[in-house]
Image (cartoon, rainbow, N blue to C red; front, top):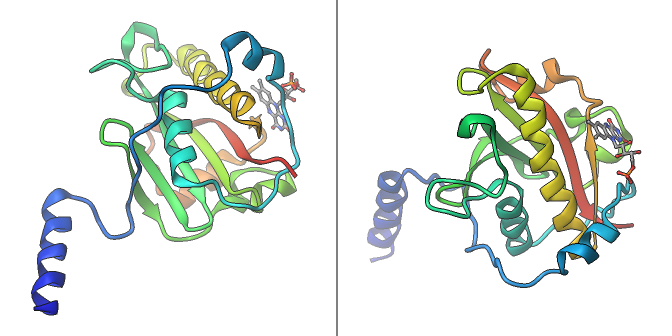
Length: 201
Ligand SMILES: Cc1cc2nc3c(=O)[nH]c(=O)nc-3n(C[C@H](O)[C@H](O)[C@H](O)COP(=O)(O)O)c2cc1C
């Protein structure tokens, strides 16, 4: 019986395309949070992070705020010509994941702890979450738009963190070549910026 259950679960995961290491996030909670003017009042960069992990509900809410679907085919952040060229990768202590925003699943891309490679500042290695904003250069309307479009996502993250009392810093200081290699990125995947998130220390 036990063998049958394990076999059924394995088949289910295989046919649903979800591997055992992927993380299915809970449905994002899109009610609540601070009123916009209060969140804007608290928006700031903070660079001291506790190593405490974010819970999955907070992670789900954060990723929805960052660049989730708020309509059937459009997102919380705008993009030039609606190209939706930006993807989010998250780097946790347990590995690196692509956020499948449609299905709200973190698809594992690496089982290694790559946090130290996400930047040149010490806190990146111990903060619980580093978000990588990646442009698909084949989708984008023009190179200049990848920077503008990433800015909206980054600000969404800033405002979510302000609302939730989390610390965050967007970072341009990152060795893009090293990080892209560690994540096996193709030539058409360009790292725009990285953003660290965690509880304030
Ligand atoms: C495009 C961009 C790149 C940045 N890169 C870094 C960085 O690599 N490291 C860092 O500590 N802060 C970085 N920052 C954060 C800025 O230093 C910070 O936003 C600025 O000092 C203003 O502070 P505030 O965000 O609290 O208003 C960056 C900000 C932006 C917009």
